[in-house]
Each structure stands twice: as C-alpha cells, then as structure tokens.
Amino acid sequence: MASRPALWLGLLLLLSLGGSSAPASLLRRLREHIQRFQESSGLSLTLGPGAGALPKQGWLGQPLDPFNTSDRRSFLQRYWVNDQHWASQHGPVFLHLGGESRLGSGSVMRGHPAALAPAWGALVIGLEHRFYGLSIPAGGLDVAQLGFLSSRHALADVASARLALARLFNVSTSSPWICFGGSYAGSLAAWARLKFPHLIFASVASSAPVRAVLDFSEYNEVVSRSLTSTAVGGSPECLAAASAAFAEVERRLRAGPAARAALRAELGACSSLGRTEDQAELLGALQALVGGVVQYDAQAGVPLSVRRLCGLLLEGRSNGSSSAPYLGLRRAVQVVLHSLGQRCLSFSRAETVAQLKVTAPHVSSVGERQWLFQTCTEFGFYVTCEDPRCPFSQLPALPSQLELCEQVFGLSASSIAQAVAQTNSYYGGQTPGATQVLFTNGDTDPWHVLSVTQASGPSESALLIPGASHCMDMAPKRPSDSPSLRLGRQSIFQQLQTWLGPAKGSQESRVSSGD
Image (cartoon, rainbow, N blue to C red; front, side):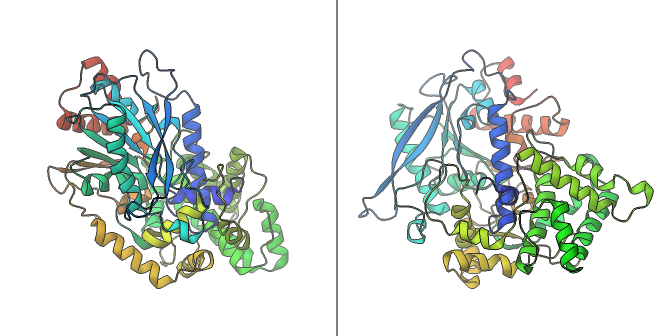
C-alpha cells in the first residue's frame, strides 16, 4: 500500500486522521512523507555539543490487555531516548507520544519537544503507539487482535511506560513528566494528563482533535476558507477556480466512456473509471489532494503550498479559457505524483477493500488497517462535502465511507455512531476539563475545529496561531517561519516556564523558544 498515491494523500487528511478510504489513506501517506523528509533533512535546531549523536532505541514489555490481569500475553513497545541534555535525575522528562504511524528517532532529536530540552536539562523520550511502526503485537491484525487497539489501551501503555521508564533511568520521583503530541497523539497527550494527573504533570497538545465526529463536514469548510485567505496565498478567485475544476471533472465523468477514458489519461489514473464507486473514489482522492495542501501548507517536504496550488489553478485565466482551472488541477496532480515518485493515481475501491482486509502486518505500512479500525470504533472523522455550499464534489458521501467499516470489519453504521458518542462521553470532547494542558492549533489547519481553541481557565490554556497548518508548531524551525509561528513557539516556551520555572540560561532560552 505504501506505493499507492491515493492512499498516501488520504491518510494525511486525518491527520490523516481520516482513514476510511483510498483518499483518506493518501493523506496519511503525505504525513509520513513529511515526517521522513524532516527527519532526514538538516532542518533542526542546533542542540549543542553531541547533537550528531544517535538516540538510543529500547523496548518495553507491555501487557496486550492491560485491563485483564489474568491475560498474561504481552508485546514489545518501542521507545527512543535522547539524554544528551539531561542535567540530573531530578530534571524534567519530556515524553513525546506516538500516534497512528511509526515513531522514528526524529521524535526525540528535532522540533518540539527536543528543541525545548536544553533550556531545562530535560530527558526526552519518544513512545511508539501500540499496533503501529515496530510496536505490533504478535498474532497479526485480525479483528479479534485489533480489539486490543484503542486510545484507552494506548493511555494504559503511557501510564505503564511512565512508571517503567522512571525506574529504568532512575528518574527522581520529584521529576515532572510532560507529555507532547501532535494530531491524534496530541489528543492522547491531553487525555494522559486528564486520566493520569498523578503521573503526568502537564501536557502540550498540538492540533489535537479531541472531539470525535462521524460526519466531518467542517473539514472542507476550513479548506474553503483557507483557499480564500490572502495570508497563505489564497484568494476568492482561487476557491472559485478549485470549484470550477471539480465541476469540470464531474462533467467529464458524466459525458460517457470516451470522455472518461480521456480523463483517466489526463489525470494519470491507474485504472478505468467505468464503475460509479471508483468515480467517487477519484473525486475523493482529488479532494484529499487539495485538503492535504491546506492541512500541511508551507511545511518542509510538502509538494504544494496553498500559494502554488492557487497559482496553478489560476494560470491561464487571462485568455478566458473555461478549462484553465481543470488544467491547473491536472498539473497539481502531476506535481504530487512526481514528488512521490508515483507512476499513476490509484483509487480503485475494490483494491482498497482488498488491501485493508490483509491481516498480516507490514513494516513498511503506515497503518491503514489499524487506523481505519480506530475510526470505525472510536472517532469517525469521515470527511464529507455534501453541503450544497461545499465547493468540491459531494462524492464520496458519508454512507460510502461508513460502508467500508462493514466491508472490512463487519461493523454497522449505527455501531460507529454509538462509538463516536461514547468517545466524547468518556473524554469530554472539546471540554475535557484537564488542568495544566496547553492546546496549540493553527487556524489554517482543518482539524483545529475539533480541538480546544479557547482557554477555559488559567489551567487549561489554548493558543491559535494565525496562518499555521497542522502541527506546524512542533516542526523544526526554518528561516521562512512566519512571525506568528515564531511568536507561537515563544508562547509554548513561556507556558513551560510557568509550569517548570525559569530556564537554565538566557542563551539556551532563546534557542529553545525559536528566537
């Protein structure tokens, strides 16, 4: 599945977080692409002497079922350690939580929280999420085994790891542990403080969609608004052009076999467009592409920014050609495929279902089956465009996305709706009531509407960064970072000062805050 561009962009939507279809998987792969790019690049803060030292990798034995003490089965959970700035056993521990993909060594070496560690002499640990990356229990990924995959299981792992790692590294009982995470992992960071305040001293939750939702129509509302934002290179004309491009794709899909064959060739599609369900998947993949551009706007490793996408969509408009926006969308597809080294755009519904049914884990996989299971049993997050005001295609519709849960796992639409309601009841949705949690979001990011963007009191803070995209505050700093992003990182630093006290030195403080 790693070679399929449609799957790649779709999973990014969800943070990808949306993992219900070929377009959803496409977004997840975009996110993986960005993570790998940033880890392999030199875009990192100078962490001082020894910065080139490799982080340590370790493994913890964790119970497969932490809620049943009579079940003795276990699995190995991977973690990473960066101790180059750890000043003493009484210093703080920054625990970077993994989410719905592998967690690499960059989690403890670049960006937040690693860049903040020198100022407080902190130990930095990254904990990979169960069932993702190399932390997959033996026994495969059948439905019975996936019953041990949920946010509640993941939080139990956090609590167990917190205690085990404190013993392993002889961390003082007085040392404060602060959780960091982005996207779904950001939600886990907030929930870890909510559920285990005696173990987790505070949390920084970046782009955390703490409210589960079945029909995530708000996603495309933010995408539309961001495409009109001049601050990121958008304009009302850009949004109109995007809408016109999708309308032209739909017109060609309805125009008959010859027009569909030409469309397939022009968009670089891998397979034919004869089946209605595949036509819907194609439209979903194109929406995922546009959504991914907005969600990860201006981040290192992203094939297209909002500014460049708008430039493509509006190119040639001066000659009055009605097909200019469609031609721009075609070029955008070509840019993405070329950037990923992909031969063609894949969107076959049958292939998606077949691949999602595979229960054998693959090291190279970004976890499509696992994340789909979590959306079906906890979160929903199905991105739709069925509102008449939505500028893109109304396909694929929500029923088509819910059907995937039944096709792959045998779960009904009613059970998914019930699971979403239970998640919000258990965690509190957008009013979790946790103390000492800082929620950070960018207003360009479509996921910010499911997070906490307004402080509910002095102990539950919120930071909304103008013009910032998904988890952008956690990324390594770059010279091109906007003033608002720099200010946002300074605000995070200041919040840590409130929790932990003054940093060790003014020079280190400036480095860690991103000045």
